[in-house]
Length: 167
Image (tube, rainbow, N blue to C red; front, top):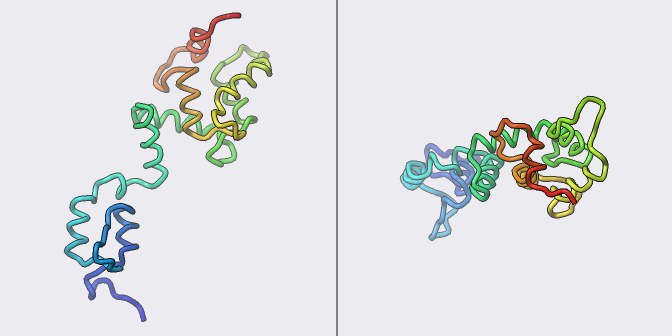
């Protein structure tokens, strides 16, 4: 027996939650359905909220932006850079990918590279939870701390060296 949503004028709560977000429906009568008038009101009130218009991934990115006071255009730039070096598409930057990222950001002269101990120190600084990879939030924090905002166009390593003293 199939259910005809149109003729019954109600939708299962699970479908409404999928459309409008998990926290939208709070049935006090524990009904498994939302009638049309309640759905229309919910959609009117929530139809353009982030929960309805953005994917889970997009909402997570915006949460990171809010948490760290980053503009959405800057966050997009960070994400483009992150995705460029996340070669395997895992959503994480591994040490091998990090080496390529650092080589790009530091722009060493032709035929030169950063010493391995410097790359290791940067990796330890970046991998905050020491789990062997950088998630996007760790990447953003590392990038901002060492290379400035994503919108800056100056030499990225100037900021890195200006924050450190020679010992």
